[in-house]
Image (tube, rainbow, N blue to C red; front, side):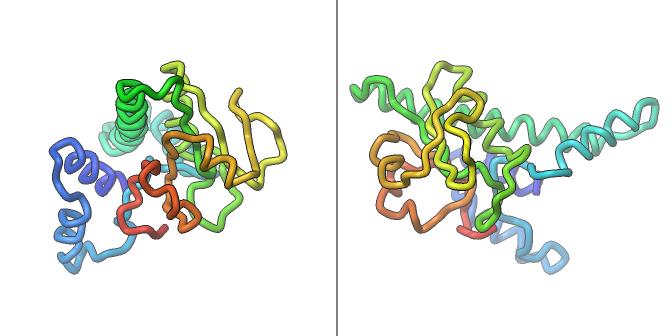
Length: 190
């Protein structure tokens, strides 16, 4: 996954069509078209903590891959957050006072209620560190706040209030506000 995330970052940074590049790479039958859809980085129950634990266990063991995986995922969240901040700044230049960033779902995949250690949380923290307010739409979360940001269960109000909507995975629920949505879900699937 880190490989395709980095291809996507490269393409986005150069103004290229990431989907075309990834589809071309996947024509190689040994690679195929599975697990090639970019995201905001790895996440979930185990992978981030297990990778970091492996890295700690590799102390004094020659390695490069574990370090690269951890670093690639940190850089991916940095890249995504910078892209979101750029969108917010363009709104400020267009006269929108105090734009609100919405985080659509904290989960890593559609149909999931697991958001522990999801990559969108890292993006959210980076955006908030720039002083940009964040509203979270997460219907499975009972709390009124998540890391100091308001949580709502009202999707209609969420879409109305937010100026930029950050979605790790696309949902047809966002089709009516597609112009506000920032996602790297190129193929609209998990």
